Image (cartoon, rainbow, N blue to C red; front, side, top):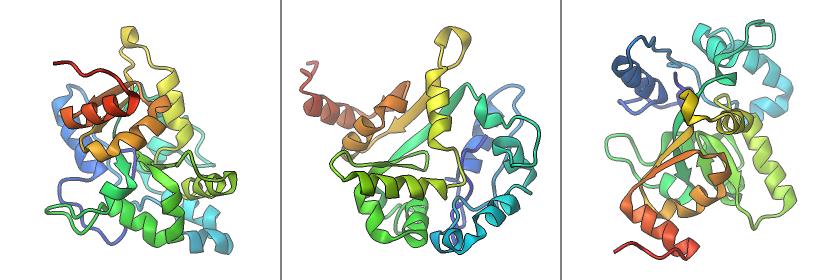
Length: 222
């Protein structure tokens, strides 16, 4: 199932969370794909501060599949996100997110949506994000970290607590892999290290593995 909706002003081209969930479901016997097509991934700060946050959350909850995944205040059943055995996700570095993506657009569409919906300087205080949840840099002030937390309150996808819960209940013997992260670019070493406490399985390129080994001063294998 997808853990985030679609960025506004973006037409997905085979790279959305819903597309990925559908592809995995086809390869997984007995799976039924869910979709968050048409569900935006965050509440813009201007809407939130105008006192319309509750209305925006209530409106998105009328998507049956969003409601099934994340729930809504008047929905009595337990949402799926609270007991998933695995979250498969990418991890985004602020710098690499700004790069053009071939066939998609000038930058990561989720980054662009956050940049447009929030104060742009706030993202400079973040190291990056895991599954859309922004992680503050370790060298910023407590006030700046608080503002990053506020950015996350406007996110409509999986929350920090969802990743933490999934990570803490991981158990390979019970087929609960926990949080599985895929990362390629060596520039992502800092956000990987900042978010490592949420990660159970890390799948990286050799280049990123070397960058992490250098950062942690681990001798490389020949």
